Image 1 (tube, rainbow, N blue to C red):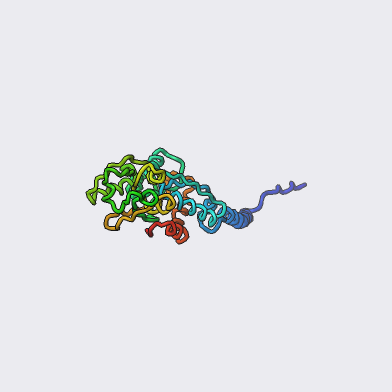
Image 2 (image 1 turned 90 degrees about the horizontal axis):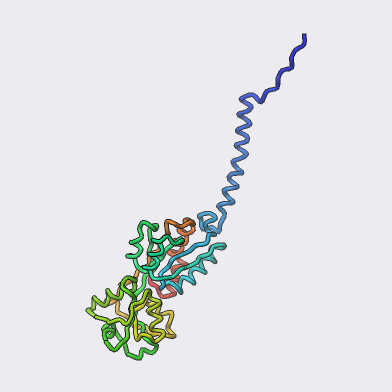
Length: 271
């Protein structure tokens, strides 16, 4: 009687289990290698996001210093790129509410930032500033104090009241009971400075840092601290950012020693 050949079957269950465990063990190092590659960056954390392209909405008074800061950040984070969009803080807030594609926001006052709580991460103050009176070079009208701005023969330009520097200006003038008939109200501090630079106004209230960047065109008349206002600059990530980790890294960097030195060198005060 012939015997039928024994049919071939797969590995026994114990053997299958051993094979499965062996395969899993081989996959673990491969997965770890994959994670290591994706997380490789310049040491800033946040994985490849450190090399992301960022768009930062920033107050007009930060125009000059942030160009320097942006270059320093890109140098410290190879492969990254920071693009700034400068405008009055109230304009920036409107852009955020309209869904403008951006990653972080820096305003020239806390009031504007506070009005965007649902749109931003937790803000951090990165700098402070104060106001000065900007006059034509040589100060031909001999402006020496805030009270001189009340002279009806003087062409004074101010920022609009909805602009942070405009609110600060109104605050210090009201505190001294000084009435100023402004020849125009501008949308941001740079526009105020420009009017004075071009000789279209005799004087205007601007941030100390803006006047410091135009010493060849205007004179800056100091305002005593007791009569002045302190402008605070909060920075925050935007919740709509597609580069959340990189945006957070940039805001954190603004609070660090390198960025703070750049801000101090430009005349901004310590937070």
